Length: 176
Image 1 (cartoon, rainbow, N blue to C red):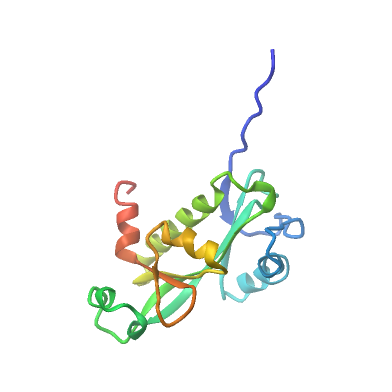
Image 2: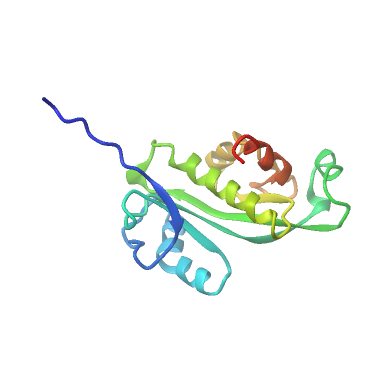
């Protein structure tokens, strides 16, 4: 009788001292370096909150960061701007970084991380206003990934995308 390989069960949790940041490698030096050297400082200084996805509460299979942000509505496409509050600048949530370790690719972890980030942003927006989620995609492959989930290009800044919080709420309308 052969024993089937058990798939790991992943959890998403805030970055902590127990997580092995040094072993993380996603193939992008900037993202690797950020997690290994800067993420802890950003957390301590309350500049960003990093979350990790892990199979064992130690190994980092991927991560993302969230922070507060503001969006100049003048930079939005007209059809979107009409649906937003009538202020020149509105609060938003910045999904600053999102990466999956090369070791854990092709397991759907990018989608899991994104959905968790969007859900947290939505929940937070019920306490602290946020009209949208903004992301700066690192390359065209990342742009395509975010567009799959409804993110809209902001025309004035290359590879910056925007997802209205109303759209995020629709994604989770059956969950609550």
